[in-house]
Image (cartoon, rainbow, N blue to C red; front, side, top):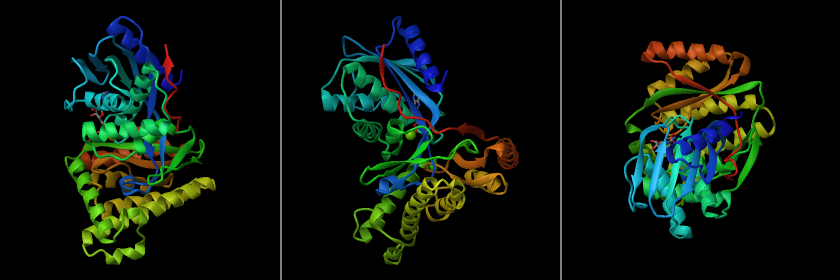
Length: 382
Ligand code: ADP
Ligand code: MG
């Protein structure tokens, strides 16, 4: 049985166990990797994500009253609410409630619901467990209420839920990918026009290996907000609405050296996304190697969002002939490194990274070998 079907079944079973009757709808949404294009989405730039074979399933049934009952196999206990609260609760339910609230804002407040979450997406590792949860919940709740909505609109609704209810100022990449991904492909997404193009990923000869540092430094969210502010200031100084419109020739007009570096990352990273997409379109995936390394250096030096753990994994990877390229992935200060490996060398690479990392940090990284899969499974009303 495929991973999404297994999770679908797990969520159904857990729902039946919790409530004694079957769910009304179930939806299964994937996490994602991002091949290149980091900190570009909120600068109206380009990203190149793909959905991965790690999923979150939501099984849901509408109630006759307005109560809400939630549980997740990742968190103990269940959450019971008298009604949809107007403000965040400060726990995982916020991701569910934010999306439910946005659906209510657009289509009128509906009845309450019971929902059960089952997932194998690592939480907080930069693989978008939050986006997968939001999208699965949205698709399941919309199906239960009999509302049809275009995928892009669902992605935007989920993003608004995360931005306004949870309070995380993230871009649209995660939700867009969970909805629209296609197996074996990455999505070249223009975050300004929201136009997208599928680009083919390499077949079985190469493997996408995610090496999770298993650290998340405190700095992560404050630095994220600070980088957003620095990028906005740099764009303003150039008289532009975003750094998307800037080119390397503009850099010397940015007086503040920190802002100049931040801008340089965004400008060069956008170019790297386009050139990576081009390599993939031309079916020369090994051309990604230098692009991945250059992205890492730019994130480390110009954008200053890497950390010792990520640098260590990328350096170890770069020392191996079986590795095509590697870089930190996600917002930074922890999470995963993305490593593109010759498939035959994957075991050796894992071992080398494990050893080198353990010598330095006295712990092992966690590895995920991932495949590019389809976006959210069409909702099924039981
Ligand atoms: P990520 O990179 O994994 O998306 P985030 O910090 O954006 O990291 O989102 C993680 C949060 O999303 C968790 O702290 C939790 O609140 C919520 N979440 C993710 N997956 C689940 C799940 N399976 N069950 C309940 N909550 C989840
Ligand atoms: Mg997230």
